[in-house]
Length: 418
Image (cartoon, rainbow, N blue to C red; front, side, top):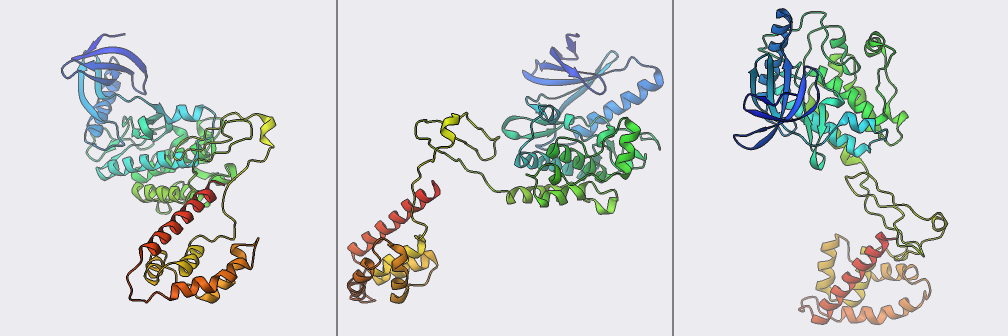
């Protein structure tokens, strides 16, 4: 392993890239850790010129882009027969590694990752750059779920010196668009198709276009229509089936025309998913949680004794007959001042209940003694009506109203914890 490239001191080898070795290194001038991507130029002259031109094209393309979802390029240089790019050192996991774990990713997490990729691609497309090789191994998920797009190695720029020849295919076969397979000129919609392939694989655990060899995969890409991901993964909502279908449309005009629209649809779909809150069940003899699903995180399911699973869990809460805001209004009408009732009516956006409404609701409010509340109402009602409409609110009425609201809030909390 080499020890230095230009001013950069090599620390370790990170792996083999598409064009050469990737190293972890330090920049002694500013004491910064960087990733160094290299390409060995010790090739035949014709190959050397082409690869070197494409390598610098990557540096120029990525160096022009400054976006939170795109890896940052710091420097480019050459040392002997080795050209290199110094870029942001990322600590995280490739999406490919996440898929290789063999576990289905939560739909919400998939939507979050892919929408970030779409936003990064939209920014690149706005600057005239097509990635050409969108795939799970070129997407890195770092701290707090933040996503970075890497490897613009075969990106095409409008002013690029290296042009793809007709019939020359660049990219990974499994993620290529139909126009890439046919060797046609491509635009940003090709990246959108590739992102759709990646989205499909993240949702279902398998690629939409498969075959025994490259030719079979390409044939499927041109002619095959994969089943909706929702038929493979029941957790996928219908809206997401439509998003995938639009991203994977064979015809360019039928596909998303820009990545920002796709990102917006993905985020809108994520917002429609039911938000899972912390759910706590307390078994009779064990403090363990039966389940705890944290919002925006992978579900965590602690082990529970099988003997406890079948036992009923006691719960606290209000009767289903207690309709919270309506009951509060009825109680306020019986006990509080007119001004307090009017203020509460505005707060809840509910009409002040009449005596008929109160009498009609009484049996459901206290089913154990259906007559008790009815008998108490006339006196309470007369007491409330005895206060003139223009009289100032009494301290007693205001305090009672606060007590009523507190009781309702406590009741609602217990109901949610059932």
